[in-house]
Image: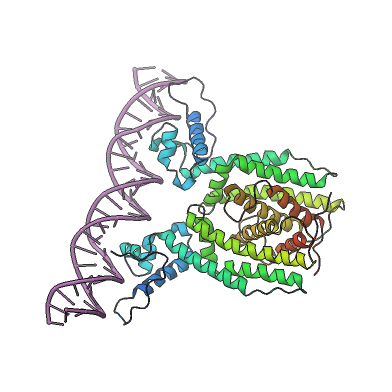
Length: 217
Length: 217
DNA sequence: TGACTGACTCAACACAGTGTCGATAGCGTG
DNA sequence: CACGCTATCGACACTGTGTTGAGTCAGTCA
């Protein structure tokens, strides 16, 4: 039955309009349906039937395009990671307005996840039970950590930030803070940072952690 | 059929030895089985059958004691929260050895979750789909945040820490960092802090965030 | 002592969701 | 036109959840 290889972005355009949707359109329709449903329904509560009928196909046909519900999420996660990459690439460091520079980084992080709220929340959930989702999620996290590490090292190199614990360790901790704090803000469950203050608090702590030496007390 | 009210720690001892286990023992057996299984198997992969047969009863009988698999987790979470409360209560602030004081707090946090690794991980997962688990989890988080907030305010009051953003906001962000970073360390997925360095990194950042003023750059 | 009660137990069922198989329909190409 | 490939679905098997209804068994009380 030559199942479509899951994950592959489908074969190239097959020319010609056909009365029924082309395979690529179907695939896109499934993805779109999932994304839309995720805005209001938790991933767990969405059945494959929902996705199939939302895309105008039967359940068995769904399996022609994706191997499982999680595979759809994985495809969506790939996009999320891709957007993270693009967002990071679009950032440029400045030596004056240092605080603003970091605030831009955190802002982009926040925006990326806010824009993809449903998908991000679903992945944050799914990574606990699906190793491939976890890998994807961790890959994205690593992207941000690498970027932060490089940033801290650059600041240290030009003497703007004091030496201290390995830059990477600090980067990991700070990004962990962001991830969890932003998740909290996105869901609003207590205790959480109010939406209009998240960035300020987080940047404050980033500045303190990167540019000051922890006092010996 | 007078189902046992879920959550209630069962009726008082019903006197007399009986050939089969008493209700309380059954309930304890289910809890113990769950805890044990969670050490090696993710919660999602455990079926009610596993819990029932592990406790020496049939599946329908399981429902006599708990309303669902999640209810069992909830009971386990209650214990976790309780231990958090006890751990926090056992902490005493010192005005000298300030760093050591905070390190003790984080150490207790880390220990509590390490000791209950399986349960903690299962709850971290389940809170995404079960509101009651989320509430319990958030209640525990609030405990730590309240404690941290009070600690920061005390330090500010005695002039040891500078004024700045609301203490509670900083406390939320710092505890978010701990939760996520410790989760990462517990699972070991990249990027994560090595087990022997977590505490040092986290305490460093706590110190910087609480005792220094973020530089204006 | 024998009917009664309430705790406790389970076989059998109903149901929801997942994943598979085999048959088939339509299109493009040789 | 017939062959092969893409695409589609009806029907089925399986797994896990939760419910029902019919019990058992130990204490209790008249």
